[in-house]
Image (cartoon, rainbow over all chains, first blue to last red):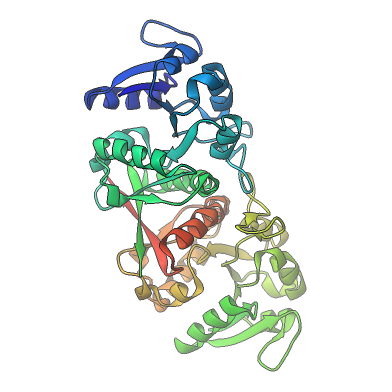
Length: 203
Length: 203
């Protein structure tokens, strides 16, 4: 599949590398094009699927630069977190409670099929879940059922079995997925490694 | 131990029942005293340990009514969540990101030893963790190490082994523990039961 990864930072490079490894034709989009990355719009124009791996604080701008017409009708996987470092560390979120970055992206691009996922784990764990033992999980949410199925299939190719990907419902569930980040950051601090994740046990 | 449970709702009654079951002398405090519950101040005055099980929106007021001198020097376990239902369901939080209810309580009562815990699970799971299979966890945080040890011991008597109680550090970690609630609420919706919890897997 032709995939545009928006964001040429650690997360974007990691995801692009894995996507190429499993056979996709990947173009990386970035704000300042360079040898290994084109503009956001150029990357998105030719793609069948878009993956937002930009910093949360820059995501809306990056997606605007990618242009609505290059996103329309396509699955747009959003792996970003609206971390707010303006008041130091640990960061808070720039949007939370009654809204989320996932929803902001969906509202800004109503013709794209936004699926929030991958934002709850470290970038190395995203593409190599076996780094962490146990039946730890990812979450997906979004308004389009078929788009979520495409995301689940992509995650399976990364090593996440479908039964370990929990569908939390429509895009408003991005609030919960993003608001988990402050706990995740505390866990990283307490356990001393970003190679961790949660599993969900139920009665 | 003489324990004051503040809050006569479902959570308070559940915790008080368990505390009595494991041998403690429990007094329940409530806003409007009645047969089975005294005033907040009366309950707190005679207690060696205070457990805040009021609704998050009423916690600061309840603790003020309990009076600072009745809390000073004591372990104050805070199990509340600052859920904000003012904009409907699902709720957001009335405090989040760069502050938390746990911190607000500690600031309002600097002489109390606030320990945040128990707020991440359903009240039935709080006192009967075996309702949920697996090595699922609770978190504790607070500024006083000895107070946290007291809380961990109390949790052990509820059925939470010490190795399943993760210490996240000082009271600022209450931000992460409280901001997990929106995800918890989505999980309850997706899995169809409040009898769930997370375990933490690490490399």
